[in-house]
Length: 287
Ligand code: ATR
Image (cartoon, rainbow, N blue to C red; front, top):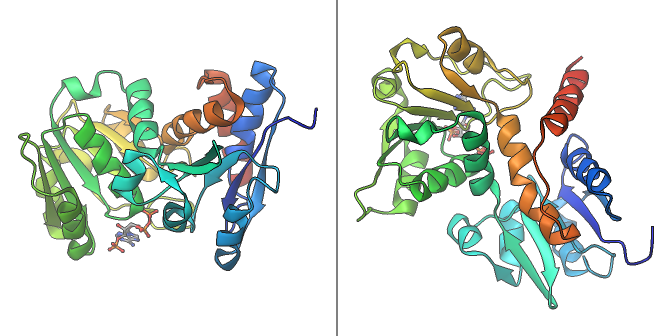
């Protein structure tokens, strides 16, 4: 590899479970490009300096994961419109001496959904989002961009769902974002064309998201952003009802595309082979 080979990394704390190195290394190899993508375990106190000297360390950019997404938003010198809206950055690159920050979770979520549940938005325009953290924020933004008419946010802590409603403001375009308490979940399911779990419930080591999906319409699509395990109890329940399902793996794979293009100069594809590679890794880690 020549001196000029671009280097990128995922910055987090902890970072050892990140699948990003596997994804980007696969694309580098498939496309025959020189370059590398590694892991950088950076404690929160060290993160500002790490970003300040990113170029000096030989990196042209990278991904930012927990707990640094909000701090990265503060530290970049240029932000995309979507990163500004979400006040969180997951993808960085250096361009003309500026450190740019983007948030690719929004397009990652939409592209994953489009790929796994074709025409999901042709069957209705009501979405139910469970949870109100950082992931929910990106997903509500994505649904608004896709012109979903009614977005209902249900969260254990109602105030956080109400904060999200305030963030996205009252809509003039015939779209609405509303917050409902957890106790109204059964009622909310009845009219949901799309259900998205954005909480960590269902992840290995966490309790399952304990809801009964029988009230969902027959055409509903169920998307879970959790991907360890690959099939959460929520997705298993949806599949048992013959509903279309989308695993969190789709968002993970699709959010990686724009970063790779910035750092290595070619737009990669999410192929079945890549998906199988990451699935095998998730399964072997769960053993
Ligand atoms: P992220 O930024 O990854 O979305 P987060 O900000 O910690 O993470 O948000 C996690 C979400 O999971 C929140 O909506 C949280 O609900 P609260 O706002 O009430 O904390 C939700 N969550 C986590 N554990 C939960 C549980 N046991 N039951 C219901 N919701 C839970």
